[in-house]
Length: 476
Image (tube, rainbow, N blue to C red):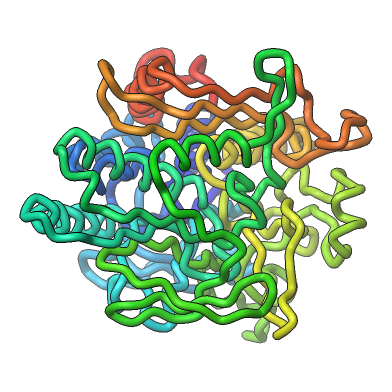
């Protein structure tokens, strides 16, 4: 009997658990360790953050799902990974009991450590807000509704939404949050009292950490910068990009721009996404030695089958540098998916200021991408157990991704920006245009249909991720 341990039950880990449980659960031992005893549908927290969706509609308990697939759940946190002796040490949340879990295969799919400490004054213990966890989204909602009451009284308020670190990612979440706030304030009749500012480390508006997106629209090629600029201009947003936030106090956000200039942005309410790091496990060898360097990079992300250390120009010219099976080279029974795996470098070109600060949008590895990777890892572990070899692979330079950024959740007067790109990492060898993507598949559109699609995807995925009837035919 093979033993598989999965650390983390986000999109990558939970998807892997579903496929592994379905294929192996009756004959092998599948165990998931997760800090919460529920699954979180993170894309809908933007609606929680403006008070348009009840928090409980974005989560469901894991135990009933895993029980029917013969998957065990440890509600707690993993602390140590003994890679050579092949076991994980975890601590149960409810009893603080220490558990030793042996494994034949280990999947690390923890999601990020939110590095609020990397920016003084940032986050729930500082002065700004976030929608990166359910508790954070609820706190953001509560603060936002306080701002709404002030706006109703005619008080002017500055709302700043964006990224809170020079190396942050998830600009799409900030893009979606600011447009939802705008729509909500319009419906409340108080938008004129709010100054709204989008503050980001992106090289250009609409870069999203993926080198921007170019698509054919009405017979001509438009860029995501043009697409987003038109939306922001129409909505009267002030745009401050090419800025890395250095610190925050209760009134101002302090930043450095691409030219090395230092400046500040005043605010009354700010939602700034922090830098993401890997989870800080202890990686321990056979004799108790620290083997972290064999498994994780300095940021804590898991080293897999990518090519690391390339300069940006060499990486951009070699899409095969991106991992295909998400397997650690030193310990080939360890896999990593979603945010947890170490990318070989950025997708968008990084920038170093004259002061030496690197301002670079980190590559996104969330949502659809995480689910796809979780499935690939699961299928390969199933292959290894049943056939002794892996048959599944998909690099991010071969992977399509869809993003639907809602602008209000109403199915009657809402809207959404629907963006489809293929591949996620540009491949100029396969698509010898200046953008490196398939311009037939890559697409951007705005409209009410996107709002319907966003809500449909929420409902469909909450069905799929509960492993309800037909779940396997719904794509990641």
